[in-house]
Amino acid sequence: MKLKVFILASLFLKANYFYSQLKGNSYQFPERFNKNYYFEPNTLFLNQKETKVIGLSDDELFNLKITKSYGLQMSFDNNFHYLEWYDLEKYLKQLIDTLTPIDFENKFVYKPFIKRIHAPYYTAPKSLNLSIPISALSESYNEAELVYLLAKEIGYSKYSTEFYKFYENDDREYDYRYHRIAISFSGNVNLSNPYEQSEIINARVDSFALACLNKLNLNPNSFDYKSYFSKITSDKKTKKSNKIQTNYKNYVIDSVYFNKVKKIATEEYIKTDFELANFKGSLAIAFRKYLCGDNSLKNLFYMIESCRRIIYQNPDLVKKGFLAEDLQFTKFQGVNFSILKEPKLLFADSLQFIKAENHPLIKNDVKPFNTYEDAFLYFIELAKEKKFNEATFSLALYYYFKKDELNFKIELKKYIDNGGGIYSNLAINLNEYYYPLIKDGKINILIDNSTNFSDKDNYFHSLQRTFQNKDIKETFKSDSTIIEITLMNELLGVQPRKLYEYQKLRWHMYQLYNDADETVFYKRRYNGKEDMEERAKRNKYNKNLIIYAPEFYNWFKDHNYKGIVFQKVKYEYASAMAAEEYHNFHTMLYINFFDNRPFFYKCIRNGNIRKEKISEITKNCRDYLFYKE
Image (tube, rainbow, N blue to C red; front, top):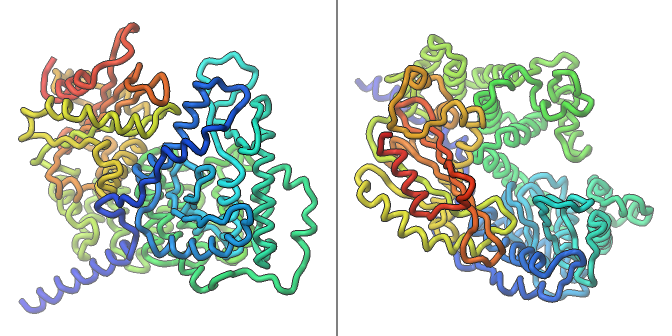
């Protein structure tokens, strides 16, 4: 009996060791939104009041100013920035304070915030709040490069504002869709050549950043600073900046502390990509780290699981060149090479590649893998040598994807017998049913009417839609024993941690299913009659959210959910301050854990109907779930 207890205790400690290795001391969004992150968007708007743009009507210019002014606040409300990450913010503030005396035109104190990878907003014009992407901390070679990037952010806030112009159906000679137009505050801008105007502003910013390095005696040649240059700056002679000085230095504060910050930022860079289902991003960063000597279990986990999830999401990539399928229009055109054929392409700076080029995967002519599947199995073998049990579970899920039930059961049993790990609960569930099954619980109806994909959608529109929430809840009031309503717009700027849980879930569902899935699994009524063809779609080997991202199993169990309906509502407005939308459209995705298939729904209207009331949209969702045809 004592021996049995000892063995179980050992297995428990072993599993917890692996869990602590994977989890680490990573960043977590706070429970509540701090009022310090409210930035007075009205003030930002007034700062742009006198700006004129030749080629835009007053209404168009007004819409653009509103969108950019209130976009900053919306980005914080939507978790596009990290909140209360004081250690890193303090470090950036120290570096920025070294730049402030150089900025003779502006004696104000700049405040840095750290932007997540996918945040779409730049530092606001004439703002003292600087937006620094986490990638800048992770990818900078030394403090000189990081200071250069900080100086560029200050330069953009000093010299320019950025607007985006969209022409949906336009006869103009130039198509400005998604084109960045930099507008100087010192005068008007003619839209006849937006690219040239943008380059002029970029050149001013480049010059300012180089001047900052020069006055701080920081060495621009210690990193690839020319890669940041605009065309105008690149065409200029840079002999002055290349002048060799004996008092040049690479660090302002401390090289040891910088490397510590860089490590933390890189871990967060990978984690964020991984959690938001950008697995190619997490794989590329983790693989770079591996080539530079990081053989940790956590890094191995990211490489293994990123590979597995990439090929699960898109089976066509199984035999494609590892991390190289996006290079088919370069020197990789017409071939199926791995990135190991040209590993320098993984590194933004040639100096960063120096540490990696002696790795056996690069140095040796014979490469041990070429495709994503080869790479996955290669990393699995490395994990086995380290007796890393999480890789056993990844291998089991891989065999599930391959519909190899025998090896799936074998690897699953190994994982459980060896003490399990972070996916123990799911492993036990799979061992009993051989596919993810949650029998009991509520259906979570997740309605995302918080953000939109329109240049005219803004902070005001998002807040205004919260007034519709009462009607939405009222529609489902009688179903409260079997469903739970979650409205994304109620979490914005209020509950960052809970919002992030749903953001992760939303992104995984977006990435897992494609247009083909929507076509195959479209169903007008979930509870409608099924013919033989419909029933045949209930296959346990269909794309499954829990097989794709097993971490969500505990989330559904802990919240007592047996399924989720994701309803996305999109809106269009006549103007940035319009009280009511003139067009809306909604789609639904329903996933449960007993039908083994997704269910898609799209709203169908005749040509005269531009929008539905929110009560009608909500009723569509309720009818879809609970009423037969």
